[in-house]
Image 1: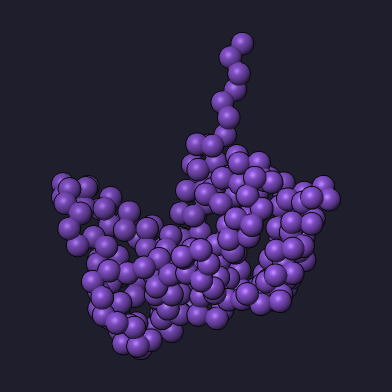
Image 2: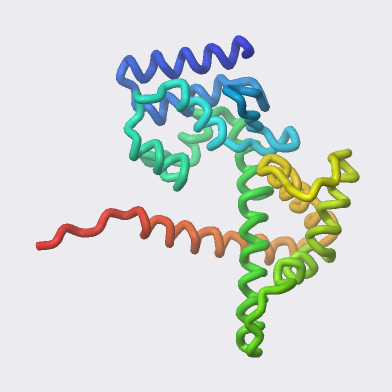
Length: 228
């Protein structure tokens, strides 16, 4: 472990012990953290995809393991599983706490991986709806149709091309880490092969779907009103 990473962990422990809000202390520790990936406790962690896209929640989860028992369990679950922080911070406050370079890399992850996944979801759902209107209930080939519409080729063909380009083995399965790398590659590929207006409209569609899912998720975790 690098000196910066050790300092980040020690700083997190000290800050929480001194009474600082654990979420603020966590973001400050993320600011100090230096490694883009590591092997820890039998698991490989990748925090920076393609050296550009910062998966900050993976690093947050890793750091929280170092202070197990010092963070309220419900607040920790809400952050790591629902991306719901215990306190509201403005974008500027969040950026200043984790640092401008890490915030820029976080935006790369947000738009290049998370939003890209929601674009595939949005287009897939559109295709399913059109098929149901026509009385076709089978989902066979729906995902490949979505990939054809978005990227101009099937998911498998694009995955093979990605793996050839990155010198990855052509396996039958795909890890979460490789899936994120592939998704980021698809994001760049889409920008390269589609015109700007199409890229903008597709991204808007993906953002609408993302906000729709977040609203539903917020409703599912919101406490019900007391009966009276």
